[in-house]
Length: 107
Length: 122
Image 1 (cartoon, rainbow over the protein chains, first blue to last red):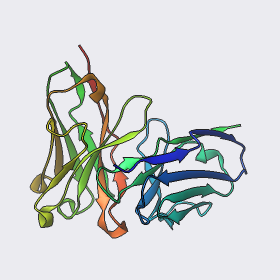
Image 2 (image 1 turned 45 degrees about the vertical axis):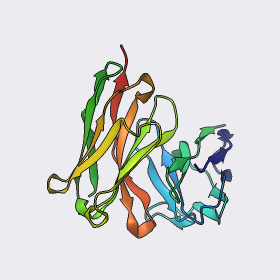
Image 3 (image 1 turned 135 degrees about the horizontal axis):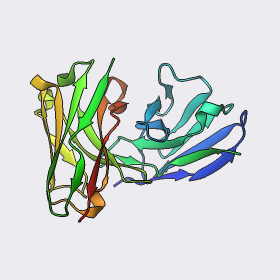
């Protein structure tokens, strides 16, 4: 199984801050990775697919990068509505595996 | 508008069975692979399994933790996805969500349902 190590598990940040979340795959997954945002009691929402393609309708302050084993989600200027939990998901091979999640909280 | 609506969750005793359903609308259900994903209370996301479409003979994949106990099926005529859960364990307690797989975006997930809660407890 491919392990997805996501870091940090939580972070505190202020509105306007630049935030970076990382996922590391235990083996190469090409660019078969997506990033998802989940708010309490809500279904996850796709932000990024194919590691770096912005989902239609998602603000451009979100960006993704990486390929192979190292991936990054960046929020260039954190907004109040961005406080949520973020997950990466690899769909390169079965079983599909998620990162442990990163909870972004208000400082 | 794409909608995925799960139902069938509830309280069940360990060793019991439950069948979840997911009603799809707003897209051509038969074209898509569909997955089940679960989230235990306060925990992260866990992939449960997949059913492919008719073109791929409705073949399935399962997580090791549920293989042999859970069965995923679909009825394209009813635009519905199912999860038959047998021999349930307390660790199966979670919100179960159906998820649409998007071939056009490299087989990633693009739409999720809100989920239905399954509680396994005596």
